[in-house]
Length: 490
Image 1 (cartoon, helix red, strand yellow):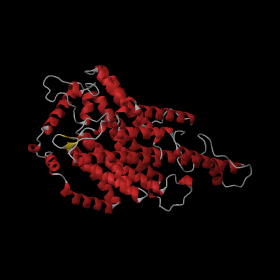
Image 2 (cartoon, one colour):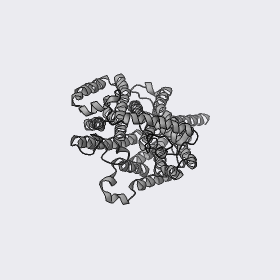
Image 3 (cartoon, helix red, strand yellow):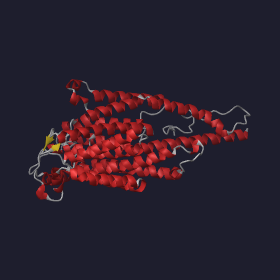
Image 4 (cartoon, one colour):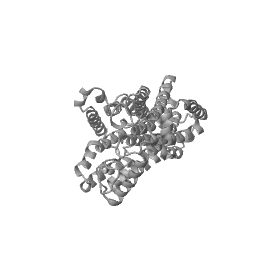
C-alpha cells in the first residue's frame, strides 16, 4: 500500500517500484540485490528528517500556541502569527505529499472522527439557540483544531520528530509552570482568594484549565526524563515535571488534583513494573514535599469531601450545572443547543445562568446532542485504545520479544530494540496523560480546546509509525522473493 512508507529499514526504492535486479546471469544473492535499492530510500528519508517545512510550521504554530508572544508584545497582535504558520505548514504538507504521488492527507479513523464532529457542529448550527454563535465556535476554534490535527497526523511520522515535538511542548509547559509558581510565591496574578491563573491567555488562563494542561503534559515530561540520552536533558525534563506539580498546587484546582492523582496511578503502575526504583524515589520525594504544601491548598482540596469547607460555593454550583446540562440535553436530544451555546441557554428556572456546563461529556451532549456525544466518545475511545494497538502490533510481529542484541537482517527487523522500548514508554505515558486529562475534563468544558486533540495525535502517532515500518518491511520481503523467483527461473 503506497500510503504505508517504510521508515529507516529495508525499503523498496521509490513508491510502487521493486528493487533493481542485478545483471543477467549474476550470482549475486537476492538479499544483496535488494540492498542497493533500499539505500536511496533511506537517504531520502534522512534528508526529509533534516528539514521539512510542514514539520517546522507545526513546531512554530505550537510554540505560538503555548508561548503566546502576542500577550507579551502587543505590537504582535496585528499579525496573525499562528494562522500564518498553520497555513504555511499545511501548504507544505499538501505539496510534499502530492509531489510523492500520495493523496492530500493520509486517512485514519481519528481524522474521520474529528471531521465528523466538525460536521455535526455545522449541521446542528441551524437548530441552535444562536446560529451565528454556533458557527463562530466552528470558524474561530474548531476548524483550526481540525486542520492542525490533520497536520500532526501527517508530519509526526518518526520517533525523532515525536521527541522533538514533545520536547517543545514540555519546555513550553514547564516555562508556564515556572511562571505560575513564581507568581504564586510573590502573590501576583491571583484570583479567588489566592489561586494563581496562567501568565498568558488562551488555554492556560483559567486556574482549572492551567491545572488540566499541567496534568496532561506531566507524563510526557516524565517519559522524556526516563529515556533522555544525557543527564542534562533528564534533569531538565524532571525539573519541568516538578514545576508542573507545583503549578497544580498553586492553582488550588480540585479537578486538577483529582486528575493529578489519576495520572499518577497510571504512571506509577507502569514504573512499578518497569522501573521500580524510580517509582520508589518518586514516592519518597512526594512524602518529603508534603510539609511544604500550602495550608490553603489542603483546605480547598478537603472541600472535595467536606462541603462545609467550600467557602466560595463552587461545589454546589457545579452540581447545579451538571443537572442543568443534562436537562438541556433532554430538551434538545438530537441537535443540542448549539456548539458553545450552553452558557447562552437560559430557559425559565435556570439557576446558574451564563455559565458553561463544567463536564466535557455533558457539554457535548447539551450543545451537540446524541450524535455529538457518539463522535466525541469515539475519539476518546480511540485515544485510549492507541497504546493497546501498538502493543498488539508488536506482539503479532514478534518485535515485542526480540532480544536487545538481535542481528537479524534489516528487512526482518523494521524496529530496533531501542525503538521497541521507546514505543512502550511512550504508550504508557500517553495512557497516563489521557487518563489525567479525562479526570480533569469531567469538571471542565474543554471539548473543542486544543489539549485533547494534541494528546490524541501524540497517542496515535506511534501506531502509524509502526504500521509504516511493518508495511515497508513486508513490501521489501515480497520484492526480494520476487527477485529470487525470477533468478531461479532464469
